Amino acid sequence: MLKSARFRFLAIAVMCLFAVAVASGSGALADQIVTPNGVPVITITSAGGHITIFQSDDSDVHALSGLNNIKVTRFLVNQATHSRVMLPPAQTRLLGRRGWRTFRIAPRQFFIPNVSGSNDGISIENPGGDLAIGIPKRLGALFINAQSGDVSIEKLRGPFVIVGSEGSVRLQNVAGHGIIRTSSGNIELVGVGGDIHIQTATGSVTARASFAERADVLSQGGSIDWRFARVGAGAYRFRSTDGTIRLGFRPGVAALVDAQSGQGSVQSSFDAANAQIRFSSPHALSLAVNGGGPEITAASMSGDIIIEPVIPLKKP
Image (tube, rainbow, N blue to C red):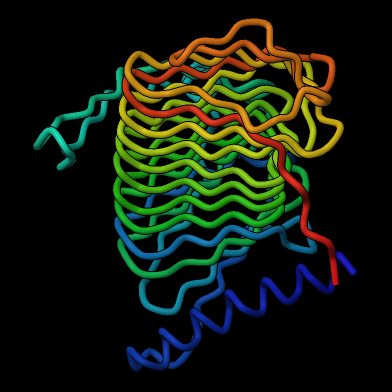
């Protein structure tokens, strides 16, 4: 079942690229195949187009493009460079109720575990156009720098760093130690686990069926909507400047939630049987959901914070 689903995802990606290739008159897909010498560290730099990452059924790296001549090369993995990633500052402007505002994200250093000189480095440079990349199950790390355009990843296990600008980022069935940063692009996570770090200046963040072990989420001007299917050791931290923060919990998910907003309201729709209020005021709330568990904090300067139960949809 999983294998057939993976083939369907690959088929869709290939068909999309094929449609673009036919429309542009190129007529064929270019499939560059690289066999890694060991567990690969893959870096992708894209100047435009939609980047689709999927898990291949072999140990090779496949780069399929219908529009352009991508460049695929090998490089020596520098442990000092690739295990400690320095993300530069970012900023964007947003028109809101109080006029135009500039939102800034501070620089940040991010540590990627288990990257060493024994990994095989594979670099993919995309000058523009849609691109589908098949990666093997065993992965040292994945680095994506999407200067413009969207990024979609389906079924990944391993560390990752995704840096975007205005394009959206969508992850499904992904687990690993990773960071996602955009200036204004929206971020959507479905069935994502591991240690997740998210930074966006004005984009929205949406997570469905989250089973992350821990999470650190910052969206200054955008909203955060995070639904827990399972919790790990934690901690979980959600922060916004103006955006609404909404935290949802499936039945049986237990946590200690502390929420505070400077100017917005903080409210819970849990009943007394499933959540014990430890402290409550119009702008702050401390809540033990289903008896309490790992620590979850939510803070906003002016946005509302909502804590609520989530009833999972029944499968047909």
